[in-house]
Amino acid sequence: MMPEPRNRHYTKTEAAVPWWIWVLLLHAFAVYMLYYGIYKGGWGGSTADQIIPLSLAHENNFAVWWAGVCLLIPGLLFFMLGARDALAIRDRVMWISLALVVLGLSLDEVGSLHERVSLIGGWWALLPFGVIGSAVFGYGIVRMLRQHGSRGSGLLVMISLGLFFSVAALEELESIHFFAKPWRGWRLIAEEVIELGAESLLILAAVLQISTLTGQSLNRISILVMPKNVRAFDTLVFVALLGHVATAVLLIPEDRSWGGGNPEIWYPMAVFLLVAFHFLHVPVGFERRFVERVLVASAFVLLSMGQTYNFGEYLVAWFPNIMEASFYENWFTRTSVTLLPVVLIAAFTVSWKTLLLHLLASVALLVLLSEGSLYFETYYLFSGIVACIAYRLLVTGKTSARDGI
Image 1 (cartoon, helix red, strand yellow):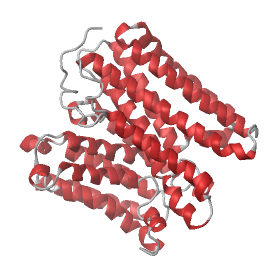
Image 2 (image 1 turned 90 degrees about the vertical axis):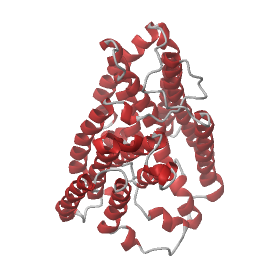
Image 3 (image 1 turned 135 degrees about the vertical axis):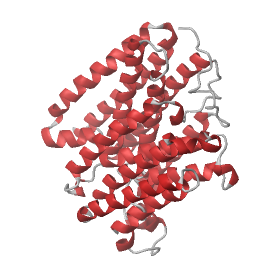
Image 4 (image 1 turned 180 degrees about the horizontal axis):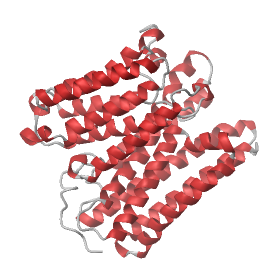
């Protein structure tokens, strides 16, 4: 496979800081928080309340958000590789199939899909999903390994797959109480370290392929995709929205007491992050005249992180008495904190007519969904649609192209 000319998908994706530095730093922080929670802070009292938001031992928190993002990023990169112009259909299927599997793993990390299925029908209920996933994944891997230009990336993906299987083996050993009680904490730490390592190898596999295509240094390639330059992302965002709406409608009446992850979180989390990536890459525009673009991107990163459980839930853990639970669990509070940042940022980038139409649609949606506001999960139906609106307005909208954006 000959190196391609500098493709417009990659020309502006150069990182000021090598991607692996900040990824490993965040990995180290997540692992330390896990260790501290198990062996230093314990799981009782105020210390536990402060550690839980950052611990990989729990679900629906910032640590799990990071683990999900570490699978979302390579999934988006593989999808971008499959969306290249003039790509042979078999190569396109190869990259897209791999992307869908990795994005599915990200959804599983955040939403505890395999745990949900196993609770309903036992581990045997996972067999059909495993067969389908293995077939799709296997096609992509075999083709990658047969081509010289993608063989290195294919080997990294295979190693990553082996690491994920080792984690599954550790979980199975834990289920039969193979480990003595004093070692169970270390088993959990080892499991999370292996998972983070496997996710890092998937990112490296995508970066290696981009380096092969563009001739860029591995250290200079940004792992944050440019959604505006890849039209196929528009289709992905829309199709995923349909799946999100279906999931939300099915899960809204569900009892949240089982303690697992929530698949409704994933779509708004992912799309808000895509919008953040867009603002990190745009060369000029309102954010240089009005506020640093990194602050605008940070707003969408916070919106993405906030989906992992609830705005205010962890502020109370870290800053007691800052607000009452009735305030941060209120339907109006949650929806306002989601919608207002999108509206304020869009006010500086799109025409007032376009903004007004989308704002009216959002308000109408808010009124329609307010009937189900007693259900905690109804919020995620609203936030997912708002995330899609933000993407359409700020990334793909015609008016967002003015002033160089």
